[in-house]
Length: 136
Picture 1 (cartoon, rainbow, N blue to C red):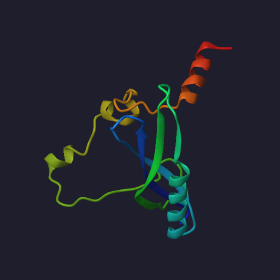
Picture 2: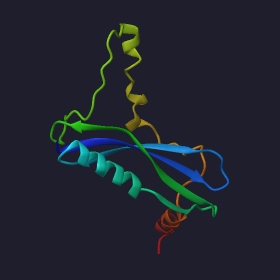
Picture 3: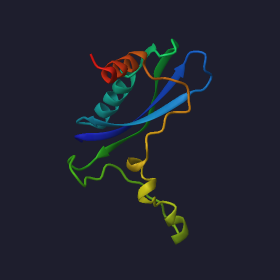
Picture 4: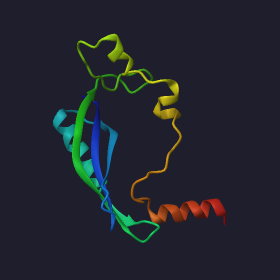
C-alpha cells in the first residue's frame, strides 16, 4: 500500500452558539500498511484540533471526532486514477438517473455559498484578508 484516502470527521463549535457544525474532510494518506495508514489518518485528525477567536470575539473549537472511512488507492496519483468506488446491485433505469448530476449541479461549478451556520472563521484570517484588500 502506498496511498490511501481517509474521511476525517471534525466537529466545530462556536462559543454561545448551540449549532454544531460537522466537516468531513477527504485526505490523502501515504503509508506502507493498513495499520500505518490508520495511525497517520488518526494523527492528521488529532493534529487538526485547534481553538481560536472569531471576528465576533467568540472562541471557536475544532475537534477530531474520528474516521468515517479509510481506503486504499490502488493506482498512481495521476489523471484518471480511480480513488474510490461504490457498488449497488439491482438498480433500475429510473434509480440510475438519480445517481447522475448535470454539469451545473457538480460541486466544481457551484458558487461558494457562505455558511448559514455559526461564524467559525478565524479573526486572524479575516484581519489578514482585510490587510491584503486594503493594501499597505
